[in-house]
Structure formats: C-alpha cells, structure tokens
Image (cartoon, rainbow, N blue to C red; front, side, top):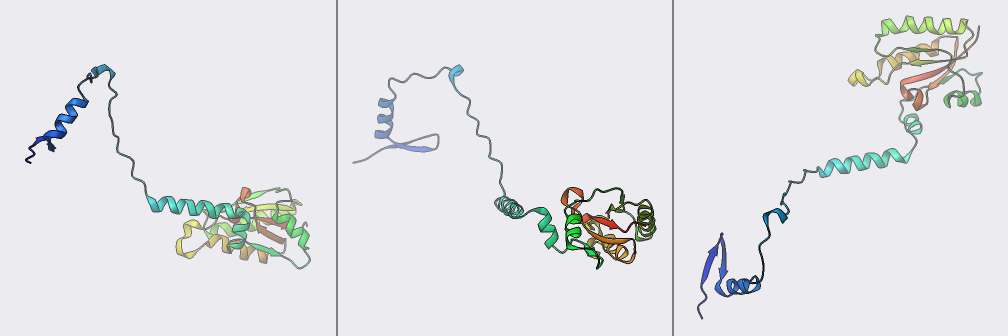
Length: 187
C-alpha cells in the first residue's frame, strides 16, 4: 500500500490524516476576528537559581538569633568595666537601662580629630554630673583591610580615662557595635 504525503507549512501530513481532520472540522465555523483573544507569549524573566538560594539561606540565618546576640558573639562588641562595677550594673548598661544624657558622633573623623573631641566630651559630661553618654564611633566598614580603626582607638582611650567606669556596645536600635554606652564617674 502506498501512502502519499504532502507538506503543510513545513509539517508532513499523510492523506488519511488530512481527510480525517477535514471530516472532524466539517461543522466548525471560523471565529470572528473581534472574538479572538490575542495570543501574547511574553518571555519569562530569567531567574538566578543561586541568588535565590543565597538569599533564602541569609534570611534563614538572620531569623535564627536576635541581632544583638549575633553582634555580641561576632567579636565586634566592646565591653569594659572597672573592678568596683557590679555585674547587674553592667547588664543594665548593656540593655540600655540608663538614660543617655548626651551623645557624640565621631565616625568619619581622623584619630587626630577624634581623640581631643572625645576627651573633652567625656570630661565635660562628667563635670555636668551626667551618668550615661553614648559615643558613636562607627563600625569601621569604610576602613577596608585595616579594620575598624576609630572603634579600636575609642576602646583603648576610654579604658585609660579615670572618669569612665564602664562601657558596652549599644543595643541595635542605638547603633549596635557602631556605638557604646559609657557610664561615667561623677565628679
């Protein structure tokens, strides 16, 4: 038996298939052009598989613990107290339990600019009988490989000055590891 084939827009169709199609379509009426739904096949936006996985992993990790706890354990938190300062006092300071009575923002300054300004601020605050002040030193993100230069210097300076009896990195809402609460010895 010989079957003839003919091509219809690049598709090869057997005569029997073509005849069966014509019979099936014999009662069909063409749609009016107004009734047709336009066919648009927008290309789907490319999706980065690994980026989504990285974002999901970062989100899951961020939900595992409180941000204050994460920063405290990351080595970026500062903490110091003189021998006569009790644990409860230090805990209260770390929780933001003392009213911040003054603040100085040092980040963006050079060490030469920051040291005298911080020294004068601490001295003046102690003379004004302020108990708790906040020092914003920044996290050192702009310091590159050198690490947080100003933060390290503030840590060392505050430990040397007798008016400073304790300091801890602030709660996240007050600057996190980019600032410290400083407890002062009143004069």
